[in-house]
Length: 474
Image 1 (spheres, one colour):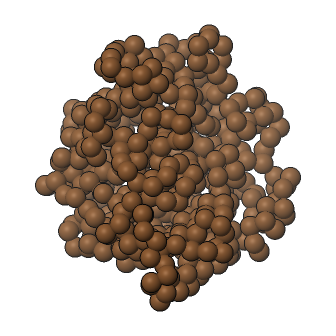
Image 2 (tube, rainbow, N blue to C red):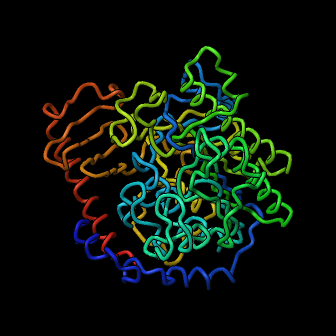
C-alpha cells in the first residue's frame, strides 16, 4: 500500500487496525517481560539530550565565531565528537521518532511535523528499558502525538480529538514534563511581547497540565526543563535504579528569546542574534548543569550522555550550517548534518573524533547492544546500527547506508557517496562527501555504476518502508 492510499484509508478513523491505540502484541510481551527483569549491576544510565533547530555550525567546537557553548565544547574535548552525525529527518517530529525507535519514521507514518503519531505497536526505547528495570523520563518537546483530548492545546490538541493522541506516558515514560510542540525559549507560557498565554501547556504523566502561573515555569525554558530532569536524576539514584532521561530542549526553535543576562553576553550583535545566540548559551549552561549533577550524584561514569539536534537551522534565523548546503527541510547536508556528541567517562577514556556517518536512529540499537538483549516483539527492520563497536574503536565504516525521505526529497548516504533526488526520483545527483562535503560538484554523470547501484539500494529501502507503513512489521 503506498503512502497516499494509507493516509486516505486511515483518515478519520481513530480506531482503525493500523492506528489503533489498543495495546499491541509487542506491548503485551513487554508487560509480561517486565516481571522477569534481570538485575545487572552495570546497566548504564542513558541521557538523550537534543536541541531544536540547532545548526551544525551553531556551537563553539564546530567553529562558530560568536556563540558561547563552553559545556558542549567541553563534552567534545572529553568524549566522542561525531563529525558526520545526522538527524533522522530534516524536520523535528520524524527525527524524534527515529531517536526512540531506531526506525525511519516513514515506517510508522510520522512524515513531517504535526503529522501522524507514535503508534502503540512500535516499541520505544523507554518501553524496552522499563523491561530491564529502568526508570524512564521525558522532559521538553514531545511532538510525536497530542497530549490531551480534553482541552485546546498547542498545534493539534483539541476536545474530543483522539486520532493522534499518543503522549509520552503511553509510550513507556514513567515521569513526564512534556509539551506537544514549541514554546518561547524565555517565559514559555507567555506569548512574546505580551502577558497572554502562548497556548502550549507542560503536561505531567498523570495527564494533568502544569498551571501556567506556576513559578517553576518562569524564566529560561531550558532551565525549566533541566530543573525537572535533575529531580528525576535524584529520584532514580535514590531508588538505586538505572534511568533513561530523554531531554528535548526547545531552543533555539522560534520563537527564540533570551533572558536579559544572556542577551547581554552579545552586546555587539543585532537584536535577533542576541536572542538566538543567548538562548543557545542558556541551553548550553543547562547541559553543563545536568552533567555536574550526574557527577555530584556519583553516576556520571556509568552514564551515556548524548547530545544532538533534530535538524539543521531554520530559514531566516541567524543559525549557521557550518558551510553545508541548505538548511532545515532540505536533505542536502545543511538540513540533516547536525552536532553529535557522546560522553561516557566509564567507557570513553580519551577524546575521539568519528568520521563515519552516524545518526539518531543509532541510539536504540546502540543501547540495546550495550545491555546485551533484544526486545521480544520489536518491530523490524531497524534502520539504525549499533555504535558500540565505534565506541570501542573497532569500527570505522558504516556497515549499511543511511536512507532519508521527506516529501519529494530522498537520499542515500554511505561512507563516501551521497545519492539525492529533490523531485521524487525523476533525477538524481551524486556527491563524494569525502572530498566535497559541501556538495558543490554533482558527479552523477561520470559515475553511472555507483548511481545505478545506490538507486537500487534506495528503491529497496523505500519499498521496505512502504511495507512497514502498511503494518507488515506488527
